[in-house]
Image 1 (cartoon, one colour):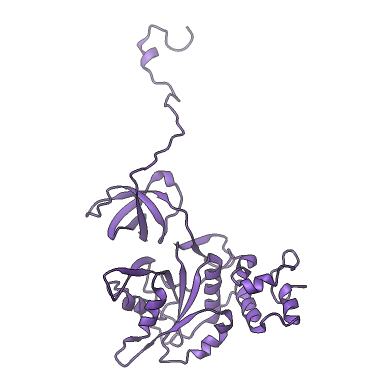
Image 2 (cartoon, rainbow, N blue to C red):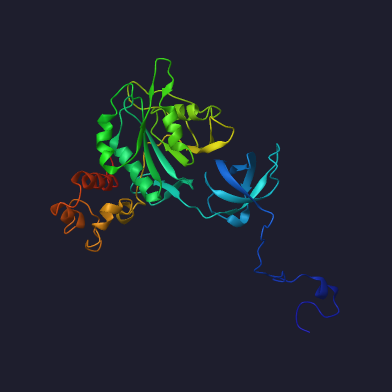
Length: 339
């Protein structure tokens, strides 16, 4: 008999051979897994909402490098009691309905996935102190349209500046807006209107530092206790107070039930749009999209594009000049670096 051991050697029978482990394509079904919602992410640990309980969890190894982000709907096994020291395992990420993305800048090919499964993007901007940055707002709107989210402008500090100064820029786009201000007691005037707009939605609140986003969240969710900051008198910029995204239940003031969800995000100073394609942006404007059906292949619908359907519609008087100009301003925002 060939080999190191003969047929009468004990090692011939007892020594384990390589590749003897049975292989199978069967995978666990996790029939006992429960549904959960990711509300915060912190250094590899995930806080989940399971029927009102807060449960800590980690990601199961089979998920590999698949990211789990705030807003994800997941399936979980293990200890889901929420007791101190307990830890569950995320075994599946349910397919996302929407994804809000950004890149660090327009030359960065790496996308940052911010939030999953939101329905509305609330762009919070101050009318003064700090001054509104329209190019940043334009970029936020582009990100909303690209992600399939309904945009909403929330204008704060109307006691310092007339909202019409900014609204005239966005009225032709048909973007809805709400306005808040502070009274003599520093209470937020218009908070009920904000709450009404957020009811029944999963809303992502974004805004640059110092615009009053954390103050707004604290007024909507009294238990949130989000840290608020101030605007530097020299630079005109605020200090980042929110350091990570968190999903909060929006309470119904008339009952003990939940009126919706809000997701507070860290202050964002840059909003790269390298991932946004012109054909996706035009789809957010169905009336204009119809006018581009005869555009040449590869047409971006920008000002300098030859034989663009938008220009032909303008020449025939079939398009609203202000609306086309506003759309093209958003389109141009994808490549503007100073914002």
